[in-house]
Image 1 (cartoon, one colour):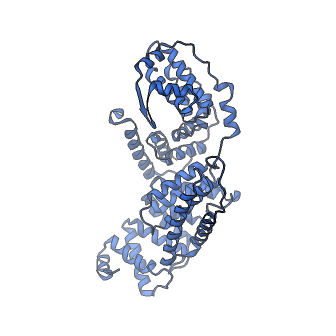
Image 2 (spheres, one colour; image 1 turned 90 degrees about the vertical axis):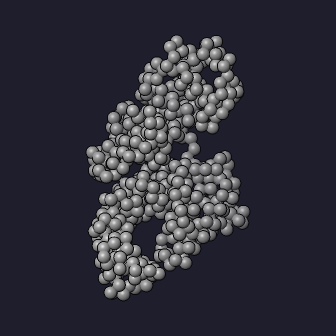
Image 3 (cartoon, helix red, strand yellow; image 1 turned 120 degrees about the vertical axis):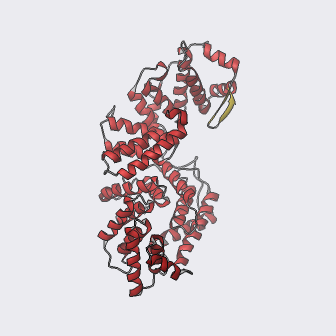
Length: 470
């Protein structure tokens, strides 16, 4: 540091940030060089004094020293102690450090190691907290777990979503996570994982990955942590440029439709009788011909209805949603409610998964005078791709409705919903907060529970507006 001695003066009079900065400079600036004994003693003193004042970065650097044996003997007990001290103040990187310190095979291309499932479970608990605190490395490590099925069920679409979120949160190419996330996105675009195959996009991200890895090489980072990825990025880029990557059939080779899903949407449960025409409410809408707007829709009712009649499942879904919500509380509207329900079922049978969540909510709550059907609602939530549906499934497992009570599965459903960070996740965030506050399945963590509660209130405000909270 150009102002090293000025910073030392601040450190000596108790400035926690200055203590950390000076100690970091001594220990990590020339990471591959030995530390002179006098300087090492000063660094340890500064780190410890800064940490005792509650400075999280100092706690993490002390833990890192003991983990890798930088100037001190390797001592995982002390490493975990300091990482946990930082975790106690919700330092985002603390959970990343705790996850990595488990020293289990966490490479995202590793096969599933059955014997390590308990450690993967612990790793998930750490990375989940880091991800909810928006720590980019934790976000993509959760993505790795969903990609390969470590502790969680494989969900390649969700893995890709998490990789994108991690990339969007990285501000500098020098960030340790940058090259690794770019490599993952490059491979996803190359192989059609969670997205359409796009070799041009793959090349863009692979080149970014290579540049990021070369920054780490120039910086002198330990090659054990990135060299394999660097070589993989270069090799894959050369194969694409040489035209050796075949085009994939269809849009992607992600999870695809399961046999159970296909059987469900074609089952008798998903049949619904076509209503008898004429339908007064529908005829009045045709005369009014309102403009329907929302999501990706901005279209006149009659045009949307004609598209639905022609077999467009998106149009079917939007017609059903509009009609049901407009007439659900209007007396004497059973005919058009039946029409909306018919179109919900028809949209789903034609492959529209977005409609499944809305129809599931109708059957769960009995909206519009519909008879409550918890089993049908559960199955609709189960196969829906709407993020909030995971939260609804969590409620089933927490209460033991239809399914056996299972707080672990409830937690995983709430967590998956919360990780997608959509405003409608406020219910899952509130349920997770309760689990952490009361020690339901997870260890009690009052501070993290309060953090989740604050996220829940913010998300609810974004969903319902201030009026909805009164």
